[in-house]
Length: 154
Image (cartoon, rainbow, N blue to C red; front, side, top):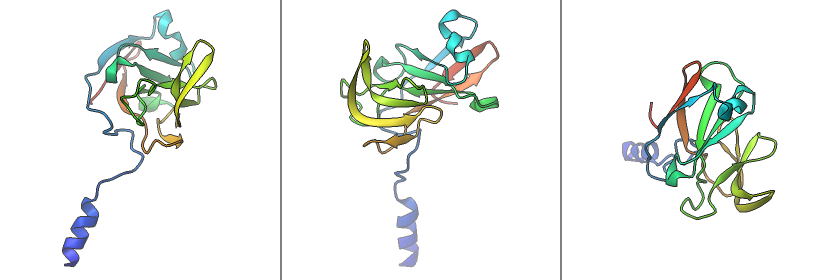
């Protein structure tokens, strides 16, 4: 009986704040970013970011962010789909003005239209506030010198 209880406890679904959440089906992501192009110049700076449109879940875009760390953690990429009501038309993630957090909602010019109120750390995608129970969907970024390669799977 103790073995069955142990098996049940260890097989329990993990509901932690994982960045590799399963809140939407996997999508095909495989593109390159040329860091020499003016479009991507913000990525040369710590806390700099760009949004690559037409990528990710429902082609909402992927945020590529310079964490300021050295090595493999220098650049991170997250899907713009919020894990709360992912199929809602307002369920986009936008970068706050400080560029230190993402929040659920979209900018309409200078106005921000909030959605669920969740916030996420920009360098990790981890949920820090609001109803989201997990972090943002993270993609893999390979720094190839003058290019970044962003993919869904390693």
